Image (tube, rainbow, N blue to C red; front, side):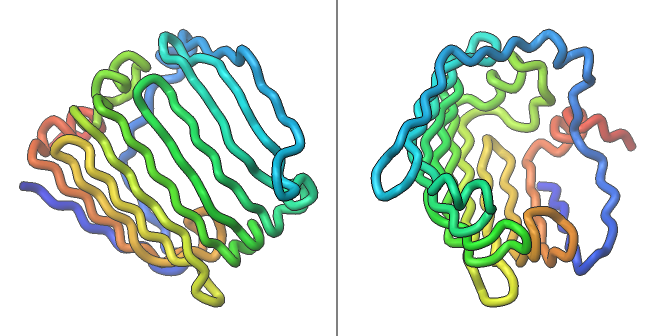
Length: 195
């Protein structure tokens, strides 16, 4: 088993080879919005319902977010959203006090897919893992910073990110990133890493 462990401290730069699908591979993808409805919901939030597709995968979105003034201002945002793309299901629930700087977060996110490898192949993206995928992430306010805990299990790949954020990005973050794969050669090939 190969293990990669990286730490991001402060404004330290990190050069990582990343998986990126070539732009011409993605240009053939067809995204379509069939319907999108935003109406007044409960408790001052906006009720959101949408349907569409990405290539052969049906996409569905439902839930609530807002209030509208909070979304525009980037402050005191509450949400409870569920979405799916084919057999991938996403749920996000919680609140964020401010987006910039990131503060007052209490947010939970889960993503599940019963066959992530097939979906990545059909969308012409690098196949980082085969089989079932489960992602669980939380953002929690800790005073001056926001705690992030992210766990990923996808086939033989496991990864985690723990630490703290000052913004929704890597700037000024303090993160411990760990990834493990039983088949490191397959993962390296997917990421186009040689040597």
